[in-house]
Image (cartoon, rainbow over all chains, first blue to last red):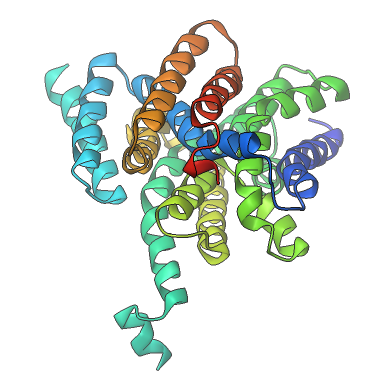
Length: 102
Length: 241
């Protein structure tokens, strides 16, 4: 590596930060347009869905342990269990499935 | 008095702090193996420990750090390609930032600019989920964001320091905690048929697009298609008011 690595890091940091800041610079007033509001209303649903899928099915060593973890998380989440409990038990089910059943 | 408030959790701000710490615990669990991997990857790519850690301190974006390190390792150092790749990998934050902006509009701009630095998938997911279920709280966002940031840096440090002694952290199974947490945040939001349709479309498009598109493009494609359909179905219904 040469001295340019630090500059490289700074450029990456600058670009990353600008992307995070631009919406806050552009959206300085309350949004009145109903369709824009509707669009923004569903952004969290969609972003949470795309951050869950497909990574939940590809985060383990095998697709079967991924399904085991996914079904465990789905049932526990539907029953209203806490974030931490669901995450730990889902990870545990993946571990048990991979360690004992595969 | 403050201690008794802290214990009983009566004070609203104290409640936000507890909620933030409680909610970010599983996210932190998922962040650790990625942070350690980032540290190990930096050293493998012949970056110094300091360079690898500084990248986590200043960039604080997992996916673009992984790609940046791989590019450095492969000797790709053209400025155009670095800027373009970082831009494309992080493009999803433009959508997430737009979704959070209406809540942050009343905050002083310096605080908005400060919070923007910490906007990651995980911090966004927790903050927006809290905003929908309870209310938006800048204190909650600040604590969640800085906790994830600190853990990311500490995990990178651990990767740099213990790299040769640790087997691949991504095989520990802890990275499963992150999508599992996203799922838990999502389920309670699915209360009506439009949200279920939007969720279904997003999941199907995302899985299909991930098979054929490189990098994180599937996120952008699924976001644009599913939110547009959601917006059209919603029209001028109550949620849009």
